[in-house]
Length: 428
Ligand SMILES: *Cc1c(COP(=O)(O)O)cnc(C)c1O
Image (cartoon, rainbow, N blue to C red; front, side, top):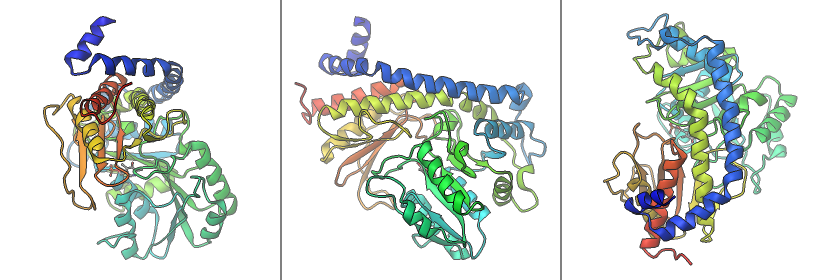
């Protein structure tokens, strides 16, 4: 197709870069077919749940005020519960982000004197203040909830011996983070999460297992709730919002856990009965409907990038052949120039704000300047193509998202082209 090459040319992609990448995308056809089959399965799963609950136009009605009898909201929560095979769900625009959802899940199900243990190593940064690992006002620690942590073994596996030792009878809740987040450990497969949950439940059947499911939804055909998790938690401006949800979070799980969460989100007594949808409800339904294929697109972009940059001997995590359990791709460039060139390329490919140039800046809470690239329809949405890199060794960028594979590809090619133009890498 010469037209497409010409179009890429016009968008700043040289023949050499295009030809080089073409070989890589062609080598990935079979891999992509497998991803499409997972998406097909998950599309059926979501559609069946919507049909079972007889989703209809009446459910797209905006509610305001208290939001009593919000049929759209209540039905959506039934749909989520069916998709994730849980007894109940809380899916709300009043949950402001993933951290908030996790904070609700923890604070709702723990009481003063309880203990929680994270068994997948240090949790995502923002949770440190929620838990009180870093001193913070209003943390769980201030409310007399104690915390312990079991790190993953050096090979990235769960430390079963350490877990057995750490989970004493006073432990009420165990936390597991599925995605690596911004650490360089492998992401945990749902199967591995299932094995460790069975192990824990065989010793203490009553302990609550919560899984931080951020970035993992629809990457596989099963979810942590299919393998014994009592609660799974995530953000709607990541995978399950499908790029359309403008805000929100979800918690799916056992009835009692979700009831506790609802009482914490609103108030004791009111629980799930209040919370108007403010007109975002259609985007929640439609985003969930699109999520399986959007996640597949993001995965294809991540795999394409891994295979491309691996050719230049950069360390890519996961590597080009590894099985995928979340949508994040890390690339260690080893120098700041590559990080900047990469992020500028991602920005230049965006449908929104492509004319802006990202620069490293000293963000509050970080110990090094960070460069961020995002040209998103929903501010901060990381299911849309986005990248960020702290300007410090090992000079890694973390990138994720892409509402369509074709757009993720353009972003990666722009990043690649920038690095070729700046003579940071040479095409043989
Ligand atoms: C993004 C993320 C969070 C926090 O979600 P926010 O929406 O950014 O608050 C928590 N855990 C993991 C693993 C994440 O990827």
